Image (tube, rainbow, N blue to C red; front, side, top):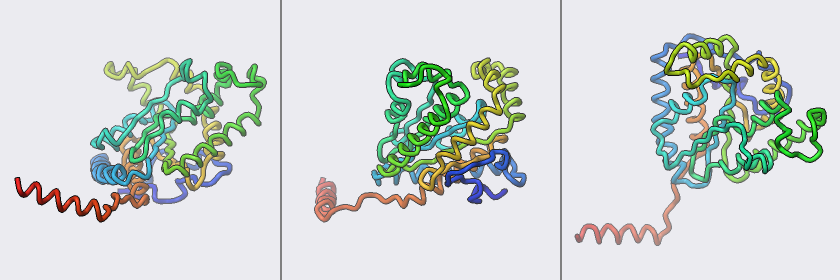
Length: 294
């Protein structure tokens, strides 16, 4: 097995300029597919037990964000890493283009509504970062948000994006203070790998439903998206809300890496079940007597 992302160089936890080209799209070494599958299964069993502790501890929530280009494997990664987790303790949201109700509120509103409660793991497939990624590449989307002072694309300047990054940083700092642990995953897929997966969707009738012509249009803006990712990650990375740069050209490498990182982060939360009071302990003794007497 190659070393997974224990190297802090793969974790962006400090604001500043970054160069995505420095972050690989494949893990070092050559792990066999079966080894990676076994790794995911082992980590998943540990995560299932840790989720039970998270639920019992009831002081924190874990919010996992997936941001990546189309066909990067966000859905399948969440499925393989977290399958088997008690659904009572997990919430999943997949964010599409905002609807009329969402557009009538500020850009963070719908993401606040989707926050996991304490004791729960939340998965956001795409997230509030779409507002500084897809919207950054397509500033015309802002025309539907009814923002004061933004009457045309010409009004969207560097200061606007600076304010939006500040809003995101403040939002994430607030979440952390309330006990929500953030894990932000950027799945680093190369352009060649995306082409291969899009072709699979075209060639396999069972995957045709996943394909959208819009995927091709967005692919044509690849360089614009990479620039938007660099600026968004560089502006919002923080020790309490780090970005994890996960290689995603090979899906089982992605899954094994994410599984390990989630397990490690949950272990670091030092989750503990609530301690019983003397009165509660006495109640357990009484309950045992009553049950034994039946």
